[in-house]
Image 1 (cartoon, one colour):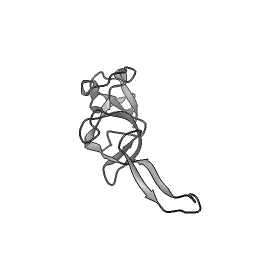
Image 2 (cartoon, rainbow, N blue to C red; image 1 turned 60 degrees about the horizontal axis):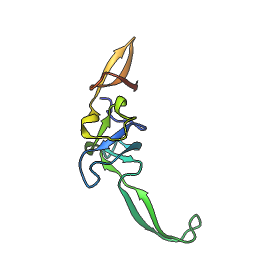
Image 3 (cartoon, rainbow, N blue to C red; image 1 turned 30 degrees about the horizontal axis):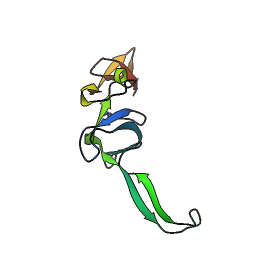
Image 4 (cartoon, rainbow, N blue to C red; image 1 turned 180 degrees about the vertical axis):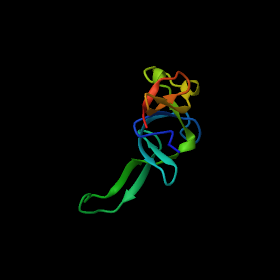
Length: 114
């Protein structure tokens, strides 16, 4: 079965501590069913001094979110400034001239080739 969300998709966080946040997927971890969304779920990590980072200290980085806590935003709604859960869509698949494509169920627009 093909995965519904891909790297580069615009998503809206629908559950969890960061509910209501929006961003673009930068990484999909298929083994753990988690995604990293740019600018969401920022955590602090303490790092020891090393050759790459001689100072050490506290580093802020993005942590992963479970894939069930994000929803894809319809391509027609990406340009609007106010995102909401009503602008999210499910992902469907269809064949166009013998090529399988991902499409948005809300408006039928093509999201990309599988």
